[in-house]
Amino acid sequence: MKSTIKSSADISLLFSQGKRFSTPFLTVMVLEHCNQHDHELDHGRVAFIAGKKSGNAVWRNGAKRRMREIARACGAPWDGYDVVFLARAPILKASYSKVSNACSKALSKAGLTRSASR
Image (cartoon, rainbow, N blue to C red; front, side, top):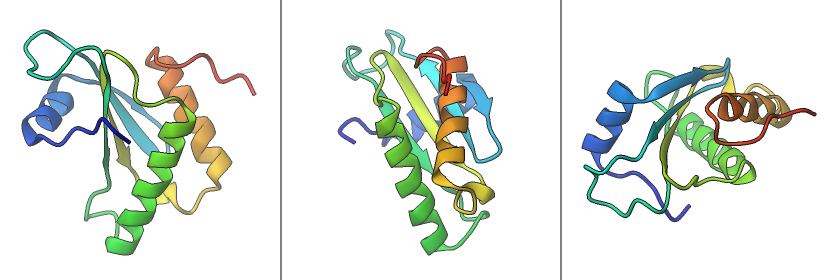
């Protein structure tokens, strides 16, 4: 993914001001760009977070890989938005299609993709 959020200040801003859309497998946080950011406003940025409380390094790496692939399939990055994907513990135990469908529904609620009607 070309456009990743790397600044802890930007992540904190997303956690405090972003809209949350939760699924059993992950939480999606979305924040529309505003003029106070110092990065270009014409492209979107994405971050993937898998916390230490949920599992060891092998689990975290697998969760991030799965979230990256699902984000790519859903059309990330989205112009004009910062999006954070936060993994939950069951993300690796569920099938890829279940996680993908849940993520698509959360993104459609956020207004980033069209309705997942499969």
